[in-house]
Length: 370
Image 1 (tube, helix red, strand yellow):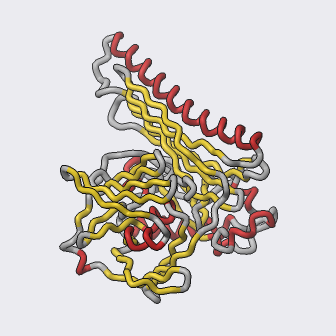
Image 2 (cartoon, rainbow, N blue to C red; image 1 turned 60 degrees about the horizontal axis):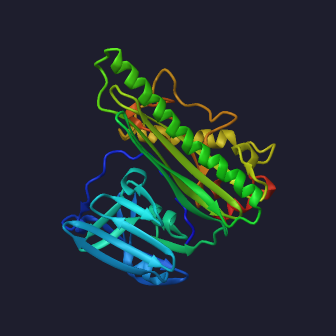
Image 3 (cartoon, helix red, strand yellow; image 1 turned 90 degrees about the vertical axis):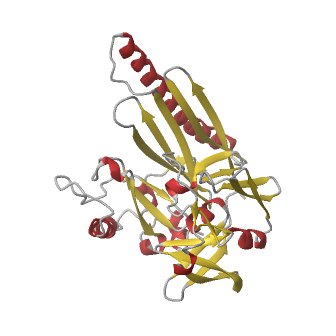
């Protein structure tokens, strides 16, 4: 299993979802793996598709261990050098040394239902090399193994604890790439992003200390920096990494900036979205319409508020994006079109919807990214 994971801003830890009483209201879906229907079922809760950890991981050849020590409930999944720990109590995942929040990026997170552990299908497909597709008409989840690039990704960690700053930095490091020159260049870029975040936090702390020395009494607590990442695509010599930087410098709340890098590892090139598309492909109107439709849906259901003075209309010439295993994900920074409380909004456009629009070197993406 190659290291894949973005994340993303660590906010307050979600409480563990113990849903035994609610299980009866959740719909079950059959699971098909490599052409065979399994004896176990997925659970469908609204838009969340939850997969049983033990049954599927054992099928993939992993050893699955459950522990409950002083109320700390964990599931440990192991195979060879790979170890993944799902912490139900803290809603955290630790994959080969990289820790991230399950509940922040994957809405349904980790669940304990009728004494069985389930995780969000998106989380499962990110941690394990398996694609998960849900067919609503057939009420069927289809799982397919995913071939990944030979490059592995490990977590590099920097920490700082001073009077005015708490900083936790996790950035990815590549290994196993045949072209070591490209590997070094990509690693330097990723490391610099993490060190820049730490430097920004240190500057915030220095500014706060100076303000306090000058008699300012409005500072609340201490500065905080959290930098994290997620590898969302690692196939066909293409690597997509999402990096998130949270900075609190005093005041009412902090702010988050998300940056994504999609790298052609064969060329050693960071790909703009336009690099993925044919030069004359008229892709923007389709994508604009898809995002506009989803914004309207979220607004109508009350899940989102859009600024009336600056509504979304166009992705522009250089949209911010990353690749997931089956889609292009476009995202907008805080305050771009929505209030701070909305966070960073993301919108997916499936690869197969862009069939015929990809440039020839990346046309394989239309076939589920394989």
